[in-house]
Length: 410
Image 1 (cartoon, rainbow, N blue to C red):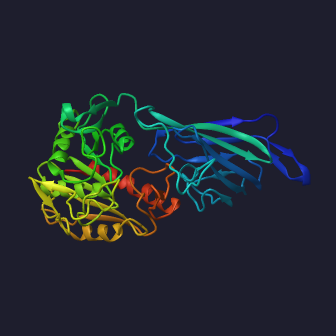
Image 2: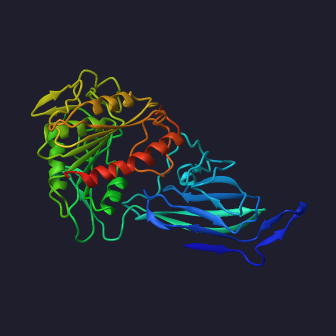
Image 3: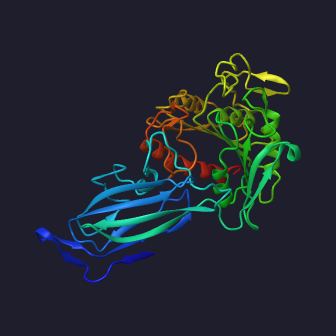
């Protein structure tokens, strides 16, 4: 689909004799797409040699303006973001989606500021405005719709008082093939995380439950003594939903949640088939108290059958399927790259090796779906990596996570 903005001649003579474009055609192959899908952006009808500025504009959930910028030399009268390297801009190198993940806030440091649009609870999508300018004129513009929740996807809240767990469930629409259900676990931030990823997975046909295990109503304040049985209860709830294939349940955990994901696959092989461990630890760490960092020392974060779990390393030999570990070499919280390598050396119950995706320049925040601007520092702590390295890791790893979910049980 294309949009043509402008009037009159295709070119107009400016000072110095150079002819600048007065119109341009801005083509986007998928103007409306899921938020984790890449789009191809191309501008044609430019005057040869035009210095062309392409920008993205979006607003986060607080009403703050963000923008990305790239300046190209339209040598042949066209600019293709999947082909061309910008001269200057908010990103460098050839990157067809660079203008989305590299957006910067109008105020504040992009390395410490997270772009959070309206979430899957409050909106099904967010919008990005594209503009093209040359010779001091805006030549073309259009909007991209980036969708979390496709039409028909249903949302349901789980409460501890009613359901024994606190979580946010997203279910695919209508009827269709049964697909791997997914349980999503956040890290030491606590609370109810990863709802947007759950909505995206449901939009792709996977029943998905974003689970809170501490730091929310009905759950402990601290990550301390959390029973694996709690996660198993949540896993059974999502496994038993419509369109869920009960043989193919997967658990995706990030940071501290990666510990629980590995242990669930190990201790509950009849329930869990696969696990994805983003920025993982190979061992279980002590309890974590957000308001008192020393208070958890010497105390177990996890229990099973009433006994403390202190594992170094977490065993993975009873896992029925695959543990896919994704690690960053510039992770400043712990050595997730070495942990991911270690996981990939282990074998499952059938003797097959687990897998790892290794990103030497990525930091601790390189997890889940791509193309949203993200910070490399959180709560005053450096997470490592760079915005570009983390964006690359997410763009490359997320399709492989989706592939694992599609192939689960085959």
